[in-house]
Length: 395
Image (cartoon, rainbow, N blue to C red; front, side):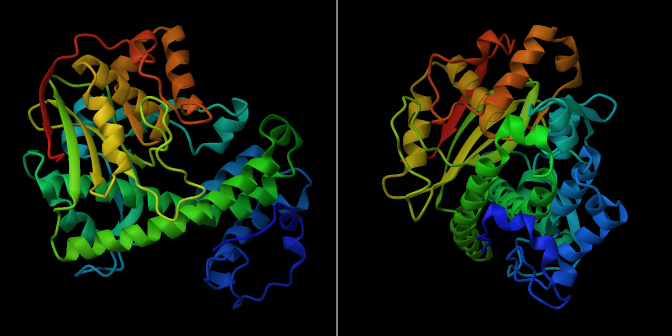
């Protein structure tokens, strides 16, 4: 695992790395097949010949460094070397349903150039449905075979469907952590040379904390993902637990992701990510089925004294419309993989647009607590929410 002081980043360029040496980033991959390729691109841009790399150079190098091709289902029968761009939000039923001319709006959480220009705030831009919600974390065979129950069958909240919702979201989170670990060393070598960036985000302390957190999370996530692969190979989906809310008509916001619930809905700490040797993850998804109904789904793995069960049970006790608003609040605050309807966003006034972006940028609060009185009603104008069905296998 990567373990390095930020101060050493200033002198990496002085290391006489040989092409066949293990890469300095800690990936266990040879230097020539890891950061050597990325650094070569930057040298062609004369990045290292200036004392202050330009924002667009950092943006492109960070984007290239985070493009990490791997099949996370390796070990399950039938893996191929061809890596595909796997959708996490179903394209045919969900993304297409709220798109306009093949496009949606999304938050640019990985856009360093936009992040830099907006002084540390995420912005919104259009994205095509072919690339929306994709990541290069599965080979073409596994992407087609593992998720057939979600992509090609009616959504009936079967154990297999709910397990695969959790698995795909958790795989994306693991992929993002692997890609982040690979990208940060190169990113930091450039970012730390930009004085104005350091001024508004205190880069040194923040990124040291990120590297520590990523390494710790990778160990926990890697072990859990191996367990999931074993369960899929044996077709054992009985550990999955879920709570699903079906809403009549299409919600204008969709997304899929996984997060670790650290606090209950009422502010009680339920797990400590820095002290625990095992962290529970909760999947949250908002999707649209073939009949045009929206589904908000919570999925998690059954555990003794489950933290996720506690978190979801608090949500179940709320009135129906409040459950939907709290869920969408969580989607904006905890999940980066979020998409909005073109018509919905274009019809918002400027005040509401600012409020939505602020909600995404706020990431709840520093303690990650969520108040039940804090709903989307004030700043996310969704009306006529009609919950028609709720399903669960919580025992």
